[in-house]
Amino acid sequence: MLNTYEQFSILNNELITYLNELISNDIKGTNKEEVISKFDRMLNDIEVLKFKSDEIVETGAGIDQVNNLRYSIMNSLFLISDLLHFYKLDEVERFKMRAVNYINHTAKPQVFR
View 1 (cartoon, rainbow, N blue to C red):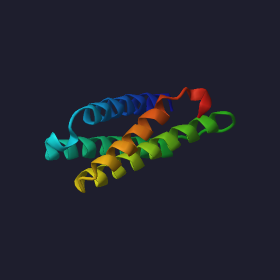
View 2 (cartoon, rainbow, N blue to C red):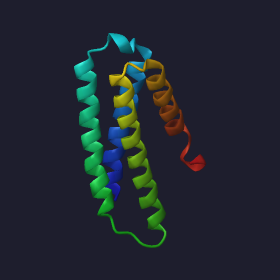
View 3 (cartoon, rainbow, N blue to C red):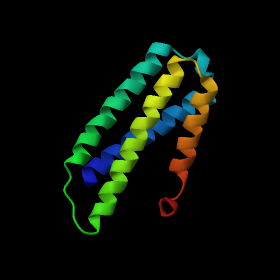
């Protein structure tokens, strides 16, 4: 489980950094194919972690940690799917709003989740 969590943490940090870059710059001025390709790669990488997390067998107190990991992975998958959809439709404001909400939610201390 720890390995899957660490891999997810790295990917999630990469995602947040990329979202901050996109939001800070003019999204409409970005290379559309490059953005879509990067999101597709992240989506595929996180899907791999989803399947790995499904294979984790845990009992007792560890089950909550596994469920939290699975929730976080699914949350990221839904985010990237939404962002790809908004980006392809040139829904810049919806893209920004969804990205900012995710970033703000992720930035909260673990205690409050």
